[in-house]
Image 1 (spheres, helix red, strand yellow):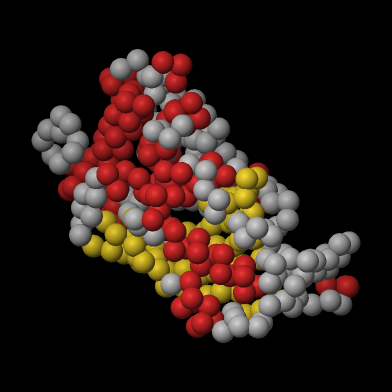
Image 2: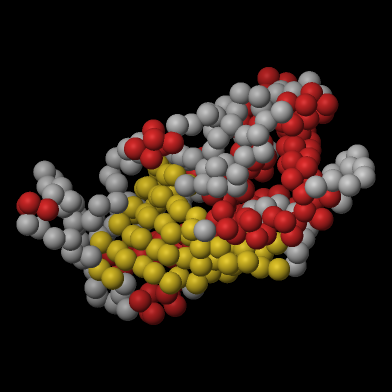
Length: 309
């Protein structure tokens, strides 16, 4: 896949160096390798490493539908470990799905900064069907060809889940315990997410990592939370806690709090304005960077020099 992308994009000698950064063709090649590793079954192998060198040790990143995942271990666990449960149980009616292929439909590089638009196919085993999921991503690649910074944006994710989740409800209903009589889709979804989260918490969060005394206490607490939205999985809601369950086996001392009553530092109340205005990236994704010069300063009379790949 990597060689095909590089050939199609015609990157043979189009490298541009900015402040000693790596050539653009090598930066885009690194991103292509990252995308290849994101696909099943390779994604589960990367997740098992917990410490993938696809990322810099001090990587900083954010995912718009969730929150920030900084450091090599967290980035590995969340970006790749999310799909581990689907590898163990391909028929699980998870709202997430598993990426099995992708088409790169946009790519722009300036030195070590890369933007890509990617159309993945996410496979849902319970439905035996794939759905297109579009992700826009910004990367900064370091001199060791590792992801130093990343910003992932799920385009139309709210629309995608509005389409996909209702189709999963009948399959969720088959796995919900003590479901009696007529139940609407929202109730089934809530019970499925809560029971899945409680089962995982009771299995992996024991001893000093214990979050709940028993299943009933866990269900009482989780059913008292807002269900949340699938595009707001970094807030104090049930959906956020469900999102974190695949990571519990990796490092329960880190992740158990995220499924517990406190939500740890992941499933917490957030302020919209603060999240939007946060300056999370030391380098950032502004092209044509030079020391002492801000290329966004239009009065300076210096334009951006982008490679459209």
